[in-house]
Image (cartoon, rainbow, N blue to C red; front, side, top):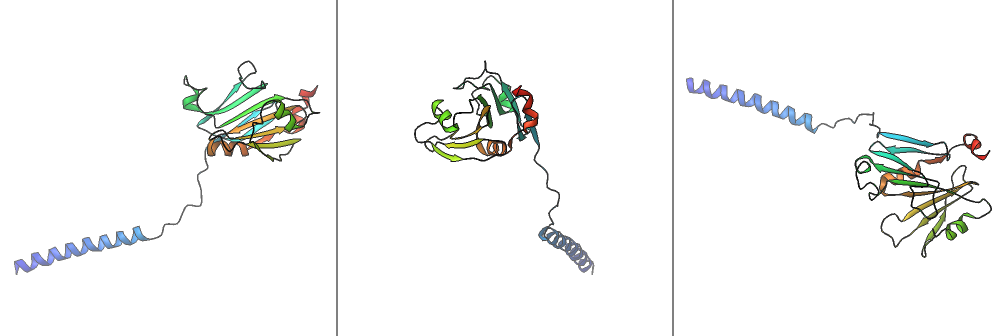
Length: 195
């Protein structure tokens, strides 16, 4: 009799444990409703009122580094260059060797010259370049130059106004997102530069 009670109590405990496991399995297997609130990617915005452009999106782990004409090594010489670079390498000694997510170079131009002629005369159209049109509000002419034979930094976007050519060089997926967020500021905010 004592053996039967011991056996019966063991079976009851085992049954309760198994019932609990079964309930847990049903909860794990139950489809979970996804939360309607999607966490937004942390981002920043950079605006350059002097040269009339904005990059509406860049990731928080990046920092814009602005260079004056004396610091740039571009040909032709840029009046200003902004490199969006990851924060960690940007503060190190090899910051200039680390690829930027997006580089925006601003060049002065004479408005009577077509953008493609200006690019060619400036050495910015290497042999084998594929050229396509780009449209953007406030831009007089826009060209995308692609170099298929070059593995990295093989896409260049040039946007011309009467006063400047903006050269944009994206790198990687985040650079592409930054490039797509590039906008010119309305003419009213740049009117002071013409006088």
